[in-house]
Length: 241
Length: 153
Image 1: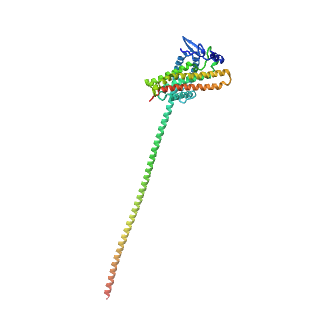
Image 2 (image 1 turned 90 degrees about the vertical axis):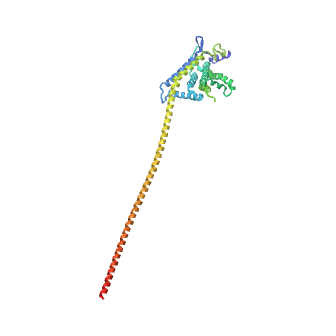
Image 3 (image 1 turned 90 degrees about the horizontal axis):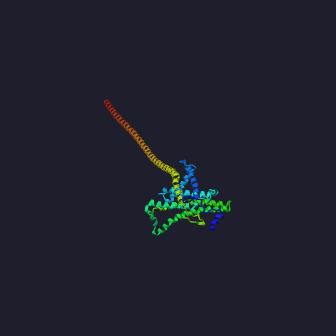
């Protein structure tokens, strides 16, 4: 109780406050969807502009998009392997782009200037729902990848190299989504909080290096999330001999 | 729905998990399909087409280079054989002319020898004829002398 009032009143930060949307009897965090729609809309516009007129000699935006595509392909190929990386590249790329755009959008756009009746706009990835959704999608993906590629032989992975590993591997299936979601959530939320508190205390200059650090962390988190997702899928489809 | 209430809030909180989660998951899946058709497929097509084009060109250039090298080697052997052929012809011609020269010289020598021999034979026969005639004349003369001497007596 005390901690809550301290945080909310002291730093004028609204931690754990949400803009609730009520649809039927389900409740949503409206601010998460609002920011994600704005950011994803911007991403889609950017991509549509870049892919509108594709040429064999890339120019301008197309160049940037091709660089991005190449980057994502390399990421997927090194983690998943030559054989099936093509199937998973769009998913890995979408994870990377979604997390990256969310993180940077949350850090770069001065959302606080837009007043909401409750809660505040910010990075969609600073909401635990978003990160758990992403992490569960990754879990489903690697199960699906393993089962669709190897059938029931996928479960050999649990007793590889010895059956002693079985409990640890089962535990891993729970720790993987947990660590994925909490790592992203914690980093982005912490960054937002640090910047928010610093802006409140010293509104000039001092927050700027922390903001740059935040941009760096945001990019790194996107890369880590996509790399780990690709690694888990690669681990599931890998053939043991 | 699970709802952890951290920081004592009766509603909300940092770990407030609700329908945002599944809807966000659906949104991300939808985004995957949209990005696949808007971004990954078209850009991938263009990039892979170019990569294929470049690698095809490299292969073609390599093939052409090897062809050129083969032709070069071919020409070189041809040149070599032409050179040896020319050398052979030249030496043959030299031998031939040498032979002809020798033959001509021999022929000329033979001819000269023959005519020399003939001349020598002619000279010899004429000499012996002259000698015979001379000895006959001497005989005649001596007979005449003898006759005269006998008659005077």
